[in-house]
Every structure is written in C-alpha cells, then in structure tokens.
Image 1 (cartoon, rainbow, N blue to C red):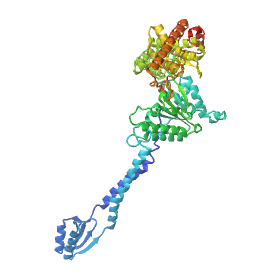
Image 2: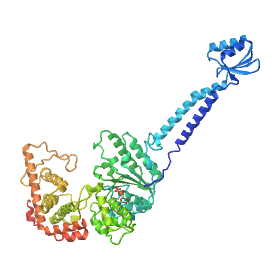
Image 3: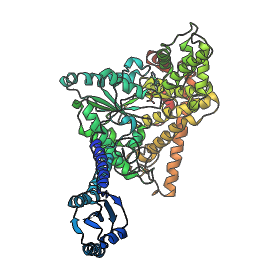
Image 4: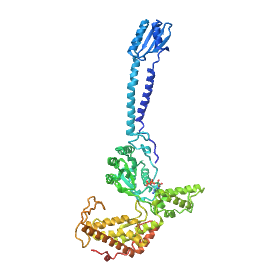
Length: 620
Ligand code: ADP
C-alpha cells in the first residue's frame, strides 16, 4: 500500500512561487534605491536658509524626488537638508537662495520617478496576479496536503498514488471462487488479444461483496500483482465531500491518473459510500454532491473500454444499497461474493499465515480452525500474529498450540466479538439451515440444494444455496416454497424447544409469498378469482403492495387466508422434519463439525430422505 510521493503537481506551482519571491526581492531593492541618500552632513533647513541669506553658500542643488537640498558652502563643505515637498515651501527656498546669490540647480531625478511608479504601482499588481495564480493552480490541481490546496483532488498517499504490488494469488487462501473469477481479469490484462480472438468480453468492473477483513483488498492487490500492472487504491469515502462538485472532480482526477498509468487496476474500497442508490435519502443535504459524484463515476466507467487495460474492482459490504446503474453491463457487471471463511477455508488461511513462522510440532491448525467459527481472514492473520508475539514475549523459539489458542481468545475478545458465534449459537444456526435443506429435499427438490452452511455470511448467519430458477409456478410449487421458507424456524422450534431471530428474513419472505398466493394470484380454493392486492408499481418484493382500497370485509378474508396458508405450511414443514429426523440429525452433526457441507457429501446425506406422501400436501 506504500506508494511513492510523486510530486507531479508541484511543477506548475514552482514558477509562480519563484516569481513571487523574485518580485519581493525586486521590490525591496527598489525601495532601497528610492530611499534618499544625499551627500554631505545633514543639517536643518533653517541653517541652510540662514547661510544662504548670509551669502555663505556657493551652490545648491534641489533633489526634486527626495525633497532634499544639497549645498556647498564658502569653505567647500557639502551639507544637505530636507525641505517640505510643497510648491510654496519650494518656491520660498528658491527665493531665499536667490537672495543670497547662490547658484541654484534643480535635479528632477527622472530615474527615481520611474522606479517609484514601478515599485509602488506595477510591482504590487504583478505580485497580486502571481498570488492569485498560485491559489488557482493549487485549488485546481492541488499540491501539498490539506488547506485549500488539494481540494479538488485526492490527498496523501493517493496523490498520484499507485504502486505495483508483489502480492500473488498464492498469498490468498480460502476464497477460491473469487480467485477463479478474477483470474480471467488477470489473463485479459496480460494478453488482451487472447480473449478477443475468442470473442469474449472481460468485465470492466468487478464488485467484491463481503464483510470487512475477508481479503477483498488482498485479492484485488493480487490481481494487480499477477498481471504486473499498476494498482490504485482509493476509499469511496474520499469522494464524499460536502462541497458540491468536489467529489466529482476527485473522480475525474483519479481516472485521469489511471489512464496515464494504464494498464492498471483501480480498487475502490467501500464503494457504497460514493455509490449509494440515488434518491434514497439518508443524508440531509449533500445529496446533490453525492449524485454528481456517482454520475461522474458512471461517466468515467463508460469512458474507457477494457482494451485500455483498465479494470475497476470495488468492494462493499452492502451491495443491496448500491445504485442499480452501477451494476449495469459495462460497469460493475460482475459480482463476486466473498463470505466469511468456512472450516476448510479457515484452515487454509491459518496454514498460509502460520507457514512463515517457526511452529512447534504440537501445532494443530485443523483444530484451531474448528475453534474459530465466524473469524475472517484478517482475524485469523491476527491470531497467528498474536501467537508469535506471545511466543516472543515468553522467550520461546517456536510458536506452540497454546500460544495460538491464547491468540484466538485475544482476538475473540477484541472488538469483533459480536460477529463471532458461540458453540451453542452455531449449533442453532446448523439446526436452522439443516431444517431448510432437509425440507427442500423432502419436497422432492434435493437437486436444488447445492450447499448448506452454518457460517455467518454478510448479515446472515448461515445459508442454504438453492439452484432452482423456475419461472412459472403452480399453486403447489408456491406452497412448497412456503414450507421450505418456514422449515428453518420450525426445525429450531421442534429440536431446540424455541425459535429465534434467525428466521426473521424467512418470515418476511414467507408472509409476502403467502399474501401473493392469496391476494395477487388468487390461488386459494373456495375464494373468488379476484385480485385483492393492488398491482405492484415498483416491482420489488414486499414493496408498495397497497391494499388500503380493500373493504374491511375483503381485508379480513385476505388476512384469514394468508394466516391459514402460513399455519398449514408450518405444520407440513414440521411433519416432513419429523419423518426425516434421522437425516436432519446427521446433517446437523456434519454442520457442527464442518460448518459447510456440499457436493458428494451433501448428496449422500440427502439420499436418505424419505419422499413425501403427496396426499398430505392437501389442496389441488
Ligand atoms: P478486506 O479488504 O476484505 O476488508 P483485507 O484484504 O484488507 O480485507 O484483509 C486484511 C488482511 O487479512 C490481509 O492483508 C491478510 O493478511 C488477511 N487476510 C484476509 N483474508 C485473507 C485470505 N483469504 N487469505 C489470506 N489472508 C487473508
């Protein structure tokens, strides 16, 4: 992340600064020149006048600009005296001198007059202009840190800041899916012609979605390292300013630098700070600024083609709040989800980080991985680091298992503790997710279940990955979906005695689905074929379903039918779970042990499912 402080923006300022200094020196010299320095000793004007009247003077010279009279007396001594620079006073002096028969000469000092105008009028004007130019240059291009300088551009390490990381994919562990996706980007940057001959179009932008510390920055640097291209690292928040237009200027500035350095990878961390959905409030004021910044980002992304060798990688923990325009083709058209590492991934990460340290033979990284559910790659790196520090402190020459275990405790009790699950919580997540998986399989859709995880992922704690993508759904398919959605909390309730907040999202989706089933599709036997819900305008699930126009009567019918669907679905989930209790038990056991089950292991387990008796499915 270190980058040379390229002083690329200093040169335009340098001439201006030199000019100012030269002008100041010139001015000082000018003033010195202007200061009166007449010959001879200084005396009072009265003495000169008296000497003149007494006939004691030979000659007198009036220095007009200095308002000084220089006289030579009878003895040949040179004296001078200042006189008031008014016409009356001058005339009086000349008259006095004439009375004493002194030869009077007036020196208009033309050169001094010219220098006077230069120093007091022209020089200040030039000085002002030069200062103005400095401020202008500084504001536009920036220079130095802070202040008004550097406003329109990125500061600090980003001042023209990029580096060429020496990170490789081999320095990243446990996020193989992301690496596979990003390898394509590397291939293209290395050899743009290869994909072109195949007619393929590599992505211009890849969005890496996942919680902090899972290695998004690391893998982005690895892409640049593997491809041997420049790496620009900026945070989305750096584009957010309260002054309208500044963020946009920074985006423009960044991409100007990137174009110059291409081929290059631009990594925008926490892009959601700048790329939040437009129009979606939040900030009081500053919305204009955000929109301008986002628009500029869109313009810049449209402004280069992949053939320019520029790829933008962006990281976010909240892909859902990004402006949809960012996700359109030609921008961040590829999304890679990077979740918290599961058991195997954690072991891989630990192995990678511990690999460089002297380990005691008693170290068991697999066991350590088992102790660290919910830890991110950064947490695991911290564990190994803590252990090394502990070992060093105790004077040991090798890192032992107990150092590592102690390291886990230190990291766990750190600020991240809230995201880390206890064993009991993890068991609950396992029961919940296994419940979903078993019921989906029992509904005859085992092929759709590709992976079951009891690992916190983003804001969810576990997941069942379903592969179905049917477009047309019959009433019984929707009812099956309801059963599958409610299976998680039903499994918790049946096996652990109570449900939990884990099922919140499921519940919201199930309720929406049941309302659709009844109110939007009128798929309930015995109810009239009438659409009770207003058609959706926004087209998003759970948004803007307006049934306010319904009479109290119809509303009650809707509510009753929705409740009946949900209760029936829960009962079916419960009975399917009971019939398949043995499989559920085994799957929960596997999840407790491994956290993540997929592939052959999963299918072997689900093969034991007892198919449903269709008769219990009821309606239709
Ligand atoms: P993010 O950008 O997702 O917040 P970082 O890439 O900054 O996370 O990760 C911080 C550090 O944690 C990395 O520098 C690395 O040492 C370690 N780390 C995180 N994930 C991994 C991983 N998958 N493999 C190896 N190290 C990792």
